[in-house]
Length: 120
Image (tube, rainbow, N blue to C red; front, side, top):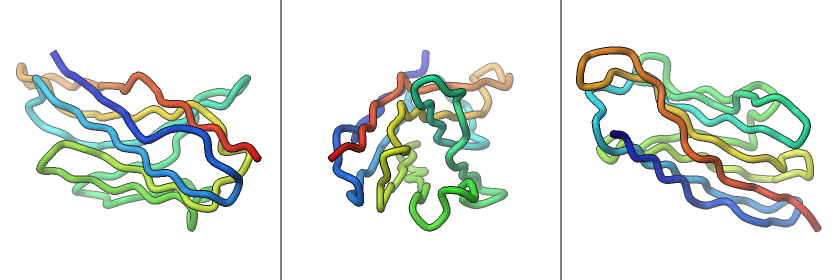
């Protein structure tokens, strides 16, 4: 069993900042990639940023300069720092981890989703 706990969402005014956190724990043998996705109302889920030991941290071009992904590998936790938030950043944000389960099989784990609302 894998437990995923997201935190840090909420309501913020345009131009404000939020920091999302997501901790994975439980039956995980190895981690390959950690990521954040988001899904706005009426839209498809989209990739926000990824981080791995092999490729480093990457943010989607449209969000570069405002969003930054980072990790605390020792705690299997991924963060998303969001600055200069805009109205169209309003979405449910999901953390994601790809790795190996205890049977050395590829697996993907998702957070439950956390609401971020940007409004004045």
